[in-house]
Amino acid sequence: MYSVTDRRVHLAACPSYEESLVNKAVAECMDRFAMAKELAGKRVLIKANLLSAYKPERAATTHPAVVAAVVRYAKAAGAASVVIADSPGGIFTRQALEHLYRVTGMEKAAKDTGAELNFDVGGEEKQGFLMADYLKQGEVIINVAKLKTHTFARMTAAVKNNYGTIPGLTKARYHAKLPDREGFARMLCDLCDAVSPALSLIDGIIGMESKGPAGGDPKFAGVLIAACNPHCADLVAAEVIQMDKKRVPTLVEAKKRGYVPDSMAEIKFSGANLASVRTKFVPPPYVRKMPLLSLVPGPVKTAILKALEPYPVVTEKCIGCAKCAESCPKQTIEIVNRKAVIHYQNCIQCFCCQEMCAPKAILLKRLSPWAKRRQA
Ligand code: SF4
Ligand code: SF4
Image 1 (cartoon, helix red, strand yellow):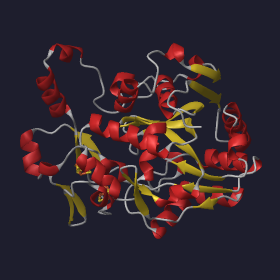
Image 2: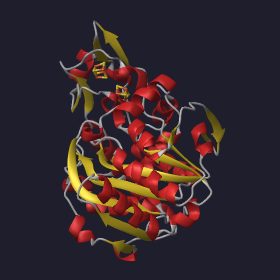
Image 3: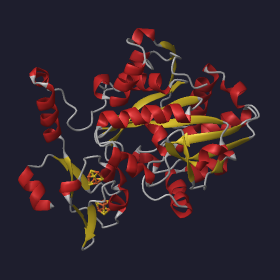
Image 4: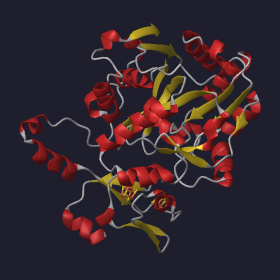
């Protein structure tokens, strides 16, 4: 069960999304944490990463084969019910969910396994958050995340996946209130405590590198990562993709709180050898190290880093669908002549617009003050 002091992490190698291989790898992860006993007779909720209506091949969402394997395991363990849920970016309506489930492969995964799909789009205040009502459908929550780089959060895996328990466009409010990475990471750690998933399982069979969580490229890592402590799962995930852990704000915050150990040597590994599944993922843009910056005093360093942050730039690929405008926490995007126009004076560089842009029409670029004024 959820525990921030648990140091166990299981690695299950899995070379593809072929059903029998995924079933075996998922069962291995679940057995390691004696989940059959936890699930028997319980209402189980699978919180997948369903960022937006992207096909599984894009590697932006949890693969349906992994979700289906978790359902099969829970059913075989005697779960009373199994529900698949997430609140994606953008609008949160029954119609949007129907489309989301169809495109991401969840509709078929549910049909093949007898799971239910969540259509409850409500939410209520709980532990300082507005949390999705769908959480009430699970006595046991299994957090089935996706392994990706992330332009704002640097990496998204187990901890960040809990953000989808905030219903619909309410998510934008948290971005607006917490525009800096550190504050946002503190909120994510608090939210993870509030959700308390019994097990976190990261789909890293094919993850996403570079401009994640939606605009990057699929990257094979061939592994599932499982832990009762989502922070330790993420620590190992960062090690697998060779991401600098000091640049992942949720891991920095987890370390301050004592949720992760000081050294990897304290992780109690089981399953595949870590070295056998380590794969270099291209980091998100502008995460590269700048050694000379360590000589610069704090406030100046912050100003330099801010100036080096990219801005979203709309390209010719824009089809005017307005998904970016719907999800912008500062409401600083308008659609003019069927093209998105960003008014940069209010932009907080959260990159939610890029996440929601299915045609990948938004690039990230550093802009001079003059260029920002010209485009505003
Ligand atoms: S930038 Fe992308 S999300 Fe925004 S309107 Fe254009 S195509 Fe749609
Ligand atoms: S324009 Fe994009 S990056 Fe800027 S605040 Fe809106 S969603 Fe965030």
